[in-house]
Image 1 (cartoon, rainbow, N blue to C red):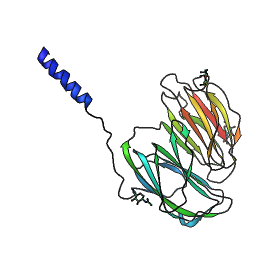
Image 2: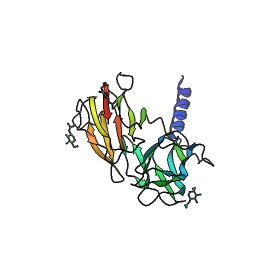
Image 3: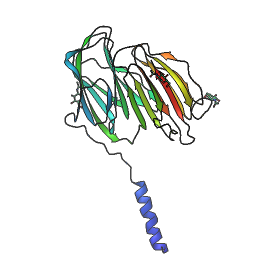
Image 4: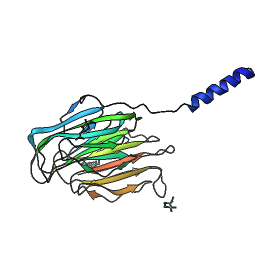
Length: 261
Ligand SMILES: *[C@@H]1O[C@H](CO)[C@@H](O)[C@H](O)[C@H]1NC(C)=O
Ligand SMILES: *[C@@H]1O[C@H](CO)[C@@H](O)[C@H](O)[C@H]1NC(C)=O
Ligand SMILES: *[C@@H]1O[C@H](CO)[C@@H](O)[C@H](O)[C@H]1NC(C)=O
């Protein structure tokens, strides 16, 4: 480049880098693009209608946990119809960086609840008597979010073993994985870790596993560990819990294994 072209190039670079980098704002879908009728699961869509037993009944103590994974960062939830009673609860919580936010109860038909979060957990917690179904919709809008989950599994059997990574190899760098334990037959499973091998740091601020126990309409963080620490076993007294796993950008190990019975 001669000096004149490099001067022009220099000003071009300035002009390009000075241009405001506005995120693209994308609008809501006109109608829900998919319908979900299962108790729990991953919903990978820009909008959805969750119809659980509309007009029918849901068993006592039922727990259902859906993970909403939309392409945009703002989620508007609204109940279209509900047969849930005052002892039942339908909640939405943010999920970011391995931490579940405080649940917000949705009980009024037509009211909007908007959350700014890349991922949202929807939790149904039925009281000690049978209840009736509901229809909940969400619409995502705002700016695009990148890939945010490296692992997700929903464990709905009454008992079982789970290990991560599932292939028995090492986990990867920059993981953000989530494991939902919500047996489809209501119960009080005990969660017991049998193997842990993560990068160690005194405050577990590099790689860590956290356990959240669903209790009193909230996800309570009951344990956070790393290294080779096996946490005490615990009972999911209200029949649901979440295990989250995060790793930083260096050092990988063999992960962890747990049993719930
Ligand atoms: C909920 O949000 C939608 C979309 O923005 C709007 O059309 C509707 O009027 C809102 N409903 C209430 C009760 O605020
Ligand atoms: C979990 O695995 C262990 C060891 O293989 C086995 O003894 C145990 O029965 C399994 N637990 C369940 C609930 O399947
Ligand atoms: C853990 O965090 C506390 C509070 O931030 C800090 O004082 C302490 O030095 C940290 N320990 C380690 C091992 O990093």
